[in-house]
Image 1 (tube, rainbow, N blue to C red):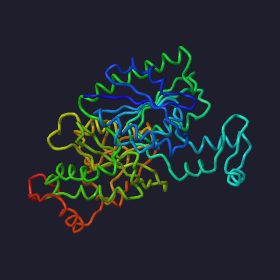
Image 2: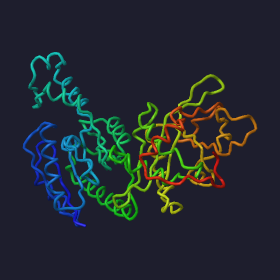
Image 3: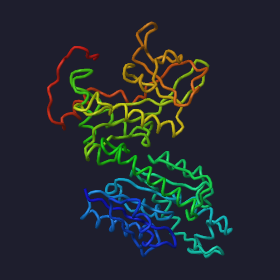
Image 4: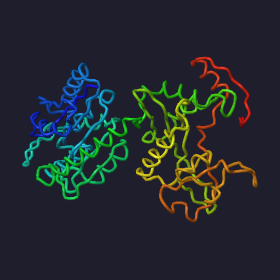
Length: 411
């Protein structure tokens, strides 16, 4: 497979910096882009055009972007064309950076809006058009990304970079004494080792799959896979493919935790989460997550893919600060990932008669001790309750399949 690396430099840099990365990607052709413009709407188009050009000759593309180059790349609409991204000291919240610079220059929004462009003593022109664009075009980056951040970066705070990484399916590595510009011998050695480690890990992972956020273009493929996976399992036919179709538009849906597993360009698994609550016996309302549908394509079940997807999803939910996950599942599988019976946490399933079997109702704390002192009733999000007639209508758009009444079905 022919692979290319595209390097996007930061302010004051050049395409020639791409030479540095050639020894770190010996199996790839490494090229740099000298963009001619300096606004996200213009530079984004330059980057998009460069990526499209590379796609004509290469089957796989890796992106390396430095500082503001990362922000420009995230405005280039290239998510579907790049396999992996490496961001070094990226600018991930441009609005916050501009507001900080306005504060440094003692310039208010009204003044900037009236003048349009204001020069500063530290060499940066502030533009109302630029700030307006940033606000009107929030970053929607979905490419699997690795971030290297310097602990004393003077442009982006740790809280900002951590929140971005957690919300955009990105790994984050921090060099405590690293600066925004990785230039000392110690810093460049750290950068080299960071890339070498991650490329080795990525190479190991590619033997099977990648896990990434679901994209809109995936919806039909995901729904069909879910239908194949659940057909005639719990009932004649299934409703799970319609459930996820509906839940994506539910206010409780957590888009930052809507994952697909992909192998050789084909989606082979998915998992998603919804926000819900526990009505505690003492009157408190405890925020928690529920999960699912989660599935692996039928021909790959019981081969370890499901656990890999589950463990990754739970790790990301933990990184986002959620405290616990409760849902309905089989303890024999989910117990391997740390789930236990919810009854052992003092949590009851809503509408379940006292004394009824609740072994299907499972719980995992993502924050140790999150449910300490909590007893109460878990509430399933209303979005999971779908109308049978609506399911039938939705299912007509899929390839016809025979509904069978089989032993073990629960509906």
